[in-house]
Length: 83
Image 1 (cartoon, rainbow, N blue to C red):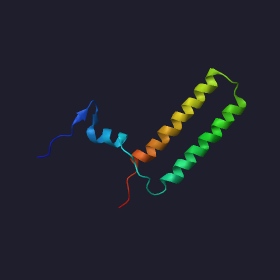
Image 2: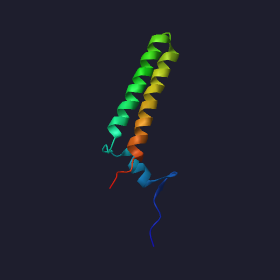
Image 3: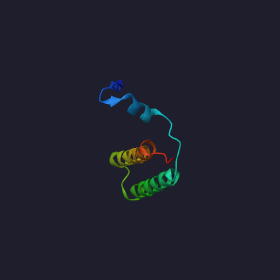
Image 4: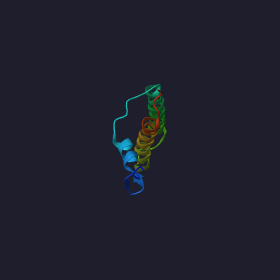
């Protein structure tokens, strides 16, 4: 009989390890990272051009950083390498 997975809160140790390990790029991941980065850069540039210098503009750029991070993390953490 197999031992149940160790839980850390609502996460298994395997889920935590996946979050905090290095993920080698596989397949077209680098291309997809680039698409996300360039799209975020284009939006950041637009925000910089048309929004007044303000706390809100600064926060929107910070949130855009977060969008880029989480989108790339989604690709890195959830891609299943092809055999």
